[in-house]
Structure formats: C-alpha cells, structure tokens
Image (cartoon, rainbow, N blue to C red):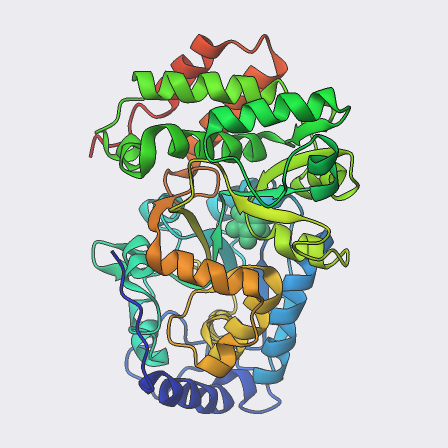
Length: 446
Ligand code: GAL
C-alpha cells in the first residue's frame, strides 16, 4: 500500500539542504531582509522574502507537548541562527483552541508565518479557502520529493499540488494501561483482550476491583475512542468506506459500534470530560484507572514523568485494531500573505531536515515522516517507536477522524459535538447515530 524509500541519495539531499540553509535568507548576514528588496530573481517564489523571524502556530504549548516543540526549536536555532523563532503556540490538545484562533486570523488576513495542520482532509479546508500557498516548488528546491512515503504524499496532495510539509506521523489507536491495576483485577497485563466484547468484560472486572476501568477527557478524546471502536467493528475497509460513501453511517455496523461505545463510556469517569488528554490520562498513571485510548504522543507524556514502558505501563492497539495503523500526521504550511515568508521557508527546511525529524520525533513518540533515514538515525528511536515504524510499513493504514486526516474540520467538529452531547446527556444511542449521519452527510458526495 505504501512505498518505503531507502536510499543513499537522501544523505546527499540532506547535506545539500544544510548548505542551502547556510546560504539562504536565514543566515545571510545581520541585516534582516525585508522582502521588498527581492531584486535579482525574475519571479520570486511565495517563500522568498523576509527571513528575519518566523512566528509558528502549533498546539504544542503545555505539558509534554511543549518539550517536543523545544527539541525542534533547538535544531532551528542551530540551522538558522539569524531567523528569530517566535513561539505562537496555543494550548489545547488536538488543536482544540488553536484551530479556532487560526480560522479567525486567516479570515481577517492576519496569518502567522506558518502553522501546524493535519495532513489529509483538514488541509482541504485551508486549500479551498485559498489560505495556504502551493509549495510543490519548495519540495523541488529542498529535494523532498522522495523523502516521504507515497501514502503520506498522497494525503498531502490536492489536484497535483502539495500545500504543506510533514514533521511527524502518529498512531492514534493505542491503549495505555496500568499493569498494577490490571493485576489487581485478576487480568494479565501482557495478554491484552482481542475483541471489544472481551475488553468490555475486562472492564467489568476492573470496576468490581474498585478502579475506574477507562478514562476519557474532552470531546476530541471521546471521538478518538469512538473511531477506534468503529475500526474494530467495521474492519479497516468498512471504516474507510465511511468517508467515501461505501459504508453508510446508518448501517448496522455503526449501530453496533455505537452500542459498544455506549457500554465503554459507562465505565468512564464523567468528571474528566472537560479535561485535556494529559490530565484525563493521569488517573491511569497514578494507578487509579486501568485504560486510556490515546495517540502515541502519550509516550512522551509518560516518559516525561519518568514512567517506563512494560514496567509502569503497558501499551497495545485497541482490541480489534491489531493490524490497523490509525494514522495522522502534523504538517506545516505557508499561509498566503505571511509577513515573513523567508522565515517560514527556514522553518519548513528545519522540520523536514533529517536532523529536525530525528530530534523532534525521537522525543515526541511519533515516527519520522521521512522514510529515508539511516540505520544510525533510526537507532536513536525507542523500541516502541521502532515497533510503530514496522506497523506503519506492514499494517493497513486508515485515517483518524479526531485528528483531521479523514474528514474536514467542519465534520470533525460536528462529530465532537455529537459525541459530547451523548456523553453529557442521556446517552441516547439512536440520537448519536442520527447526529453522525447528519454530520457526515456531505462526505463521499464529490
Ligand atoms: C494531535 C497532534 C499531535 C498531538 C496531539 C495532542 O492532533 O497531531 O501531534 O499534539 O494532537 O495534542
């Protein structure tokens, strides 16, 4: 399904990129280029211009997420010492706050120099609104055409054009579990359940032993749980069909998944429903709850609390998701009208460089978006991440709903609203399915 490009050409590309970085706007001299004096070139590319600074919007603002961004910032400062990094991060996991502020700023022609956006359907929102530049030419300039796997390039491309550069790939369908709690409930932490029904019966045992079986936080974390149950109940093909019209949202398979979702939600602690992912996961870390479904950014969350895999916690795919990689990728854009396009170019160079990808991903818990890293680069990753690199190559890839890969932001927002209404209301299963049908009504119709 995808091609992993292993080649030595990438090393030459990376060297050429670092050399280019040393001679381009980022480090030319001590007088900032104001973009108005772009003389010399007949047709300036949108990324040519002021490289004195770059303001970068992400949602890696708090907790462990901040540490990941700092790793990237460090490489950026080494590669582009004359471009000032301005951190414009907005807290809120999954971009819950950042995307709203961004939408308002883009609508009023006040864009940042670059911003984080998920590869896939979420990008189409910005592309269709004419808010981000086609940066296909930058792929040529930076020698990136063969750096990323085809499966990723496909999700970044629209009508033959590419509008962002990926920094990392995450897997969303993982269960993070406390082994001490599982043992207290008579369960073997090394033998995870293999079906949703089995998982639910384990939750009953955990509840009987006096622990919270599973935690969820704010709306998008609940959507993430729901998508993994849809994957389990529909299978990868059936799940993919939800986005191209070949699986109906009012089908029996979705009814079954909603029923499972309702049973699992009944085992959660509702006092956490307004929390971001890290506080919602904390009861698992603290030995008060058994399970949390989260993407592998949780790996950094746990590492930064000095928690060790297979000792302090265990992690396994959501039951029924064993051979499926629920994919999302962060990528960075060049907004139309950015004040410091040369700064944005410098940032895009760093996040796509081998150094940037290794430094960032090795601590963030993600896997590199580049598929051309050397053995010695890959040795810097944890066993968990190496397993996920293999999973990305060998498993079936599906796109995350909660993290912008499968559906446009408008649809994922409507799904979040439906799920939250379900959680806070009377757990109306038919009402949830109706709301999902309405939220997704325009999918697969074009
Ligand atoms: C995702 C993002 C990840 C991570 C996560 C939690 O949307 O792609 O990189 O930040 O949200 O905030």
